[in-house]
Image 1 (tube, rainbow, N blue to C red):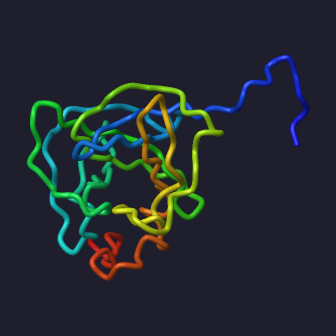
Image 2 (image 1 turned 135 degrees about the vertical axis):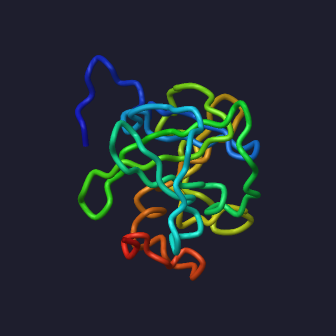
Length: 169
């Protein structure tokens, strides 16, 4: 247990909020390296269903993922609000850059850790195993995805995601 100091306010997660098909998702702000306009995407044959392809980010090849696919949402073509959020995830102990397609980037906000609850196992339209939890900000719910599980080997439970992009040359 941490000791009580003069700052005894509950811990908060600083998060970048993004929109996916009208839902608000939160990514830890400290993992976001940049936000890009939609640009050219190189398709990767036999990649996981939720990985659209790869993009060039300052000379690095970065996989581009569409979380809408992982969460059973319709994939729509990019529009004027579509952005790519470049974020760093821990993948098998290695820091790895990935791009996430966002229908819209909202803002950076604080989500109180006390407001984050485990996703219910029943009645959810999102796979609970891919969520860290659901937070509350004001009157709104914010979905907090578990990026390590989504991108890691544990994310291969559904056969449609089982193709590993590392097998592509």
